[in-house]
Structures are given as C-alpha cells and as structure tokens.
Length: 308
Image 1 (cartoon, rainbow, N blue to C red):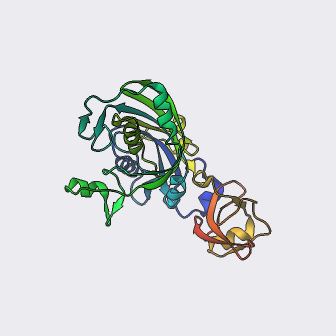
Image 2: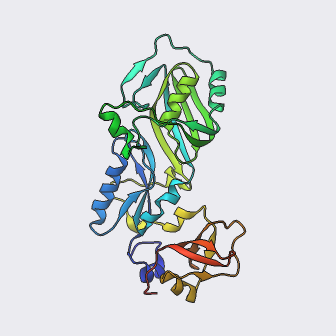
Image 3: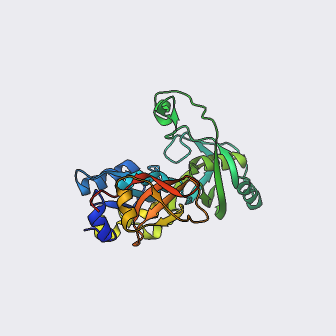
C-alpha cells in the first residue's frame, strides 16, 4: 500500500491510489507526455492528470494527480507559481519562445540596467495580458494554437492576471534573467514578449523553469522516468492547502460517505464558500460548501466510499 495514505485510506477510499506526484518535467516532452508515462507505469484503471501545463521547451514542477485526486486539479492550478526565465532581447518570436520563427530587430535600442528595472516594475500588480497566439486558450471552441497552425490570424483579447514580484537576476544585453512570482493564468512567454516591447527591443523567452507551484517545490520534485510511489506519493490534502479546514470523526464520516450534509458547531474564522473536510489523521475526505447560516456543510466532492 502506498505510503502516506494511511489506515483510513485503505479502508475507505474508493480507489487504492489517491494522491499527487511532484514531477520534474524536463525540457522537450509535453505535459501530456509526462502524464502518459505515469499512466503506463500505473496500468489501466487509474486516472492520471496534471494540474497546469508546462510548455514543451520549459522544465520544472508539474503536479500530477492520481485517481480521484484528478478532481482536485483546479485547486492546485489556483495556487501561485514561481518561475526562472531567460529572456533574449533584440528579437521576437512567433511563439514568444525559442521554438518559434525568430526575427531580429535591426538597430534595437540597448537599454541600461535602470531602464530594465523600471520596465520590470511596471509589470508588477494586476495587469492585462494578451496570451500568446500559440497557446491553449479556447477560441470558438478550439485551442488557439490549432487555429494558428491552420493559418488563421488571431487577435486574442487581453486577460487580467496578477504578477506578485519580478526580480532581476542578471542583465547583459541581449540576455536578461528574471524570477517571477505570479498568479494563475500568467504566461511567462507573453511577459517576455511584453518586456521586450516595453524596452523597445523586442524579446522572447529562451529558457523557462517553474520552480514552485504553491508548496510544491522543484527541490522536492522527482524524475518522471520511474517515480517510487511508495516514497513519492503525496497526500491529496496538499491540493487544497488554501481552503479552510474542518476535522470530523465517527458518525459524521459515515454521513459524509453517503453524501449527506454535516451539522457543525463552528467554522474557522476564514471560512467562506468552500472548506476542506479532513479526518483526525489529516487526510482529505471531501470538499464542501457552507450552508444554512454557517451551520451545515454540504459535500460537493466526496473521496471516501460507503464502506467505512
């Protein structure tokens, strides 16, 4: 039995596998390739998915969800991310990264370091960002990159994103290295493109490493080749670290297993619409919404079976 699932998991969870893997995706394969490899390792009957795509040229943290934990991917996607990016100035790319058609900007301005700092500062906060044309954004029911490959010209509307911090690590024109702490939906390729435009030089992302997704850090990630599930499977509760927590026991667990609401005497002060329900071992049992003047929890996602 997989480490970290515990006695209650063995007895109650409908699938024997319920957890997360912090995979270090290398540059080259797609995120789907990594998921397919894990699926082959586990065999048929186990659902596998990832919680946030990494472009093929990028490497770093790719959180892979196993079994019923695939239903928690959205909670991981909402968590802030950290990236290390290498930007090349003085040129543009059709894909905003090194894999596109590169066009050099003749007589591009060489900004000084203060100008670079000022430019980076202008992207911190809530900004509107136009996604790359070669992206997975849906347009008329299709992925944008598929339409572009068919020859269509797309003018994607800007979307609101949040950049918490950009720090300059190295600058020696045309090479600019930055670290970015940002919210969900932020395209670092697009950020590189827009920084180049801000500096009047053009720019594209040549290398990209995702160093963290929430508390999933690259230092703790494992190779996708053959992860040791006995040691590397992480508790599903890590996916909902941002949600308020409620711990239940006994009869309430049985009610929950049948999908019935639970009456509680109090909620954490930060409780809003959703809460994570745990057992005393800290294992995730369900996600619920608060109802009836904050006295009832109605489960929306239940991860235990009725045989408890």
